[in-house]
Length: 333
Image 1 (tube, rainbow, N blue to C red):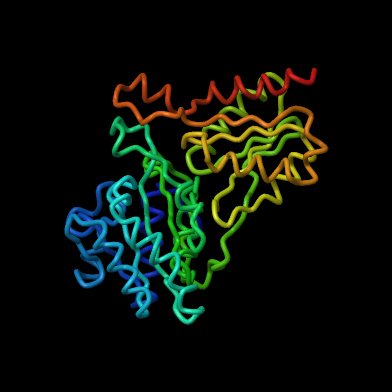
Image 2: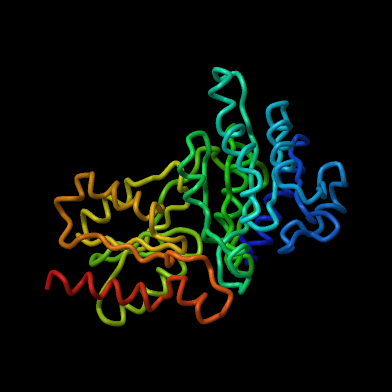
C-alpha cells in the first residue's frame, strides 16, 4: 500500500530494502553514517546495518569512487554518495576511464554494478561549486547509464533498478526534490523492480503542445502546463526519467500529434540533453509534422550565481516556459 513520503525518505527506504535483501550492497560517502548525509538521505542506516556496510569515508572523491569500482568488479554492489554532485569532478578518472569501460576492455568478463548518487542542481543559494547540473557529462560517456527521477516513487524504484543493474549507473537527485512529497509504494524486494530502466512517461496529456523535461524540470513544466491551460492551451508533459538510455519513442509520438516541441531543463543549453531530444525528433518521422521549430528553455550559459535574484534568473522558471510556449503557439497562427 502506498504512503505519502518525501523523496529523501523514498530513497532511504530503497536502500534499506536493497541492503536487507542483498549482503553485497553497501553504502559509502562523506558523512553518510553518523551524520546521515549532507541532506539526511542515509539517516538511520548506520544504526541498522553497521559501520561495515555504511561507511564514512575520507574527503577524497577519487579514492571513494575508485574503491567502489574495485569492490564492484569483485562481486560487491556499492552505492556511493557524493556530498554534492559537483565533487564528482575529482573522481572522473575512476568513473569515466574505469567504471564505464572495464566491461568492454575485458571482453564482457567483468561487470561493474555500482551506483553513484549525485545530489545536484541549484536553488539552494550554494553558488557555483555546489549547484551544477552535470548530467549531460555522464550521458555522453558510453558504458554509463544515467537516470534522473522527478517523483518520490521513481526515485525509490530507479535506485532499486540501478542497484540491480550489472552496469554503472549515475543517479541524479535534484536537491530541491528531497523534501517533495508524493505517494510511494515501498517495494518488498529488488525483484519487484525491473532491472531494465523505465522509459519516458507522460505526466500530463494535451493536444496542442509537447513539453519534455526530467528531474525538477518536470515540476516546472507541469506548473507551466496548468498556467497555459487557463488560456486554453493544453500541453502534454513528458518525463524522460532516463537520460542514457534515452527513450524518444513517446516524444516522437507526441510531437507527431501536437506538431510543437518545447524542451526544458535546468542545465545549460549548449550540448545538453535538450539538444539531443531535439535532434532525435527532427531526425525522425515527427519532423514532417512540426508546425514550428522546436524550442529549448534551459539554464543560462553561465556559472550559478550566489545572489538569489541572479540564481533565479539563471534557472528556468515557470514564467519562462509559459512565455516560450505562448510564442510557439503564436508562430503558426
